[in-house]
Image (cartoon, rainbow, N blue to C red; front, side, top):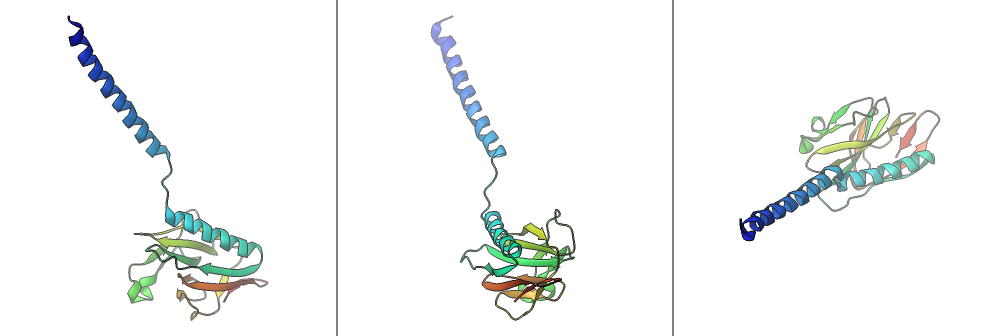
Length: 168
């Protein structure tokens, strides 16, 4: 055997082996690295603000219009598992909010976002209900005494009463 015959296939084999290892490292990194979600990060920030206001016993709750295609909603499910906005507003037909399966109880508040599909992963069970005083306030999409949805562009005041919270 000549030296050139042995080194050529060995060199190609080494290059292919190295390329295979690089591909496996890239795939493993993608598998174990969490995927960044702008909607989830924003929802977490809104929920952190909401939790702060509730823990302080009152304050301003805002859902700001971010000027993007990503829409945020403050949704009080009460004891409902889902709310279909199309039942109340034909212009928003197909907009359905489903609370996180992790949230269980009668006073569930979630921050939801619509980014190709609606996600309501940031939820909190409250110790008492929240009543939305004015259905005519800016940003209120739909609601009654048992549930409501507030969209972007709203700035509402939360106060704590003896047996419930009031959002006005």
